[in-house]
Length: 126
Image (cartoon, rainbow, N blue to C red; front, side):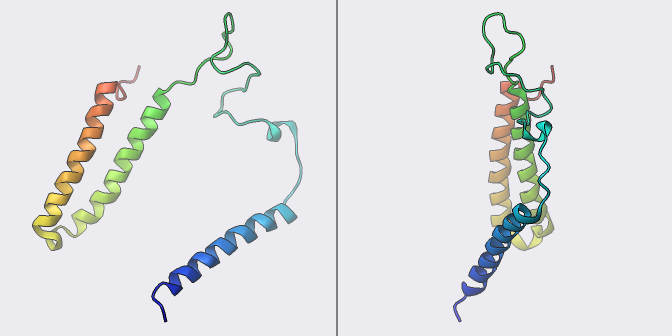
């Protein structure tokens, strides 16, 4: 038996389950539509019919602050760092010098991203 067959079978079962779940929800799910459910979700900001950024004399449509995205990217960077640091810390003795060098390069790479974010002002909370 080929070694990839169990992985392919698991992938097929997962895909079939996803398609079946969506089909079943559309078939038997409640269909009570109202005005609030049909409106676009704007992260808690009331949607306006004006263009984003507004025009001359239009104070209602303002740009969404980029600070939100910088903070989200910072969270992702450090969240992924912890995901990689934890298994390394658990098996530190077994990895030897190669593991130490690889993790030093990884921490250096993440530190460069941290320094970039710091220089761009992503850590100042105005």
